Picture (cartoon, rainbow, N blue to C red):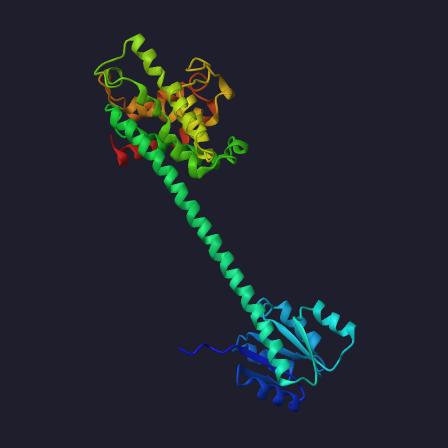
Length: 359
């Protein structure tokens, strides 16, 4: 297939020069002669050239005014312009370059010189296009690779969370539900502009998937306790509580073995603090109020709500309305009062999540 020829518009009010220039170029290029600037813009309405050869000294609109008009229009500003001129003074050439001309060619010109200068300019233009295409493709490839890495990281989080749920036969789809609760809580938090300074720093691509690891430490708990068909004894509950520190330790070990571990920061915070309470009576550290990271304070609401509505060997599921009332009554003791205000606005969405995901 024959390669499409470059298009060149040659603009000169001297018909002799115009004809001569056209004859020199027509063997190699698709040439459009224009005897005036007005004709140039008429041609540009139908043709996008690869180069414009522009005479400077023309009546009505000279070359300087013409290139100013070209460079001012987004449709034409990227078209390279080479001046054709009988002027040879330095100031005229500098003026043209300042206006955006790529090159000058003095008249009268020879065919070999004209062809060579045009070929050089078209080569430069093509190289710029190739470089831009390369940069655009590289940027797209980086975006695609980043997306792949992100998906891989989130897949690892999901897989580990699935392993935890597989062992913990009593909690069913707890991980999926709590992640969904956390999503609606966070979205409302953003709408209400609560704790905005902190939330704006979060990487949302990793924050929600990180929530899946909040109970990863349960892997360390024996099945005799984890799946006990009844209420835990006090000493068994103390052992169960160690799943928090075990989860933190597991996540920290992963972070120590890889330089790229920023995506685990949210997971570490959530796993380590979602059992802390606003009044300091939680575990494992007894953190109080704002000493508890916001991620942990949010997860506490999601985690407790899901525990209340879920059936356990030692209790029946508590209805949605009653569960919400229990959580609201925990404002200022178990939970951050500001977050309870947010929860009240979205609690009906929690009920829908349960219906959609199921147990």
